[in-house]
Length: 158
Image (tube, rainbow, N blue to C red; front, side, top):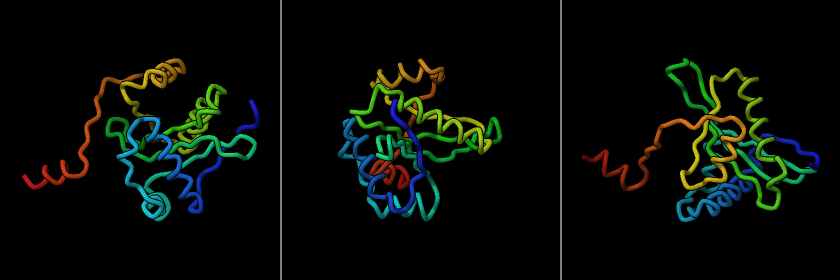
């Protein structure tokens, strides 16, 4: 493995963050759902501080990213790191970089004394599910529900 390092994204990285979001959306066959812009990235990540991004770099070249935010667990009375997105460029996969990025995130959870490290995975993404299980992550039995766009607007109008 070449030298792998990590860096927290800065405002000047907003375009690169958006590029990685689009790469992930393309992999997930959901590119048409991306409405994020550089301005929205700047506002919510850097102005409002609602999320953070960690880049993985091989010899100072960015090869992947992770976007995460905090949620709160009433059961443990502490915040959790929720990993929203994790993506390693295809040509850099199978080098241990995904696992290394998860470990670096785990260190942040421990260093900041968060309660849990959690994420979701698309049910069809068997390679990722198998990977997560292979490193000891637990697969919980919750299903994720969400509202967006017109469905949310219709719901609140009822």
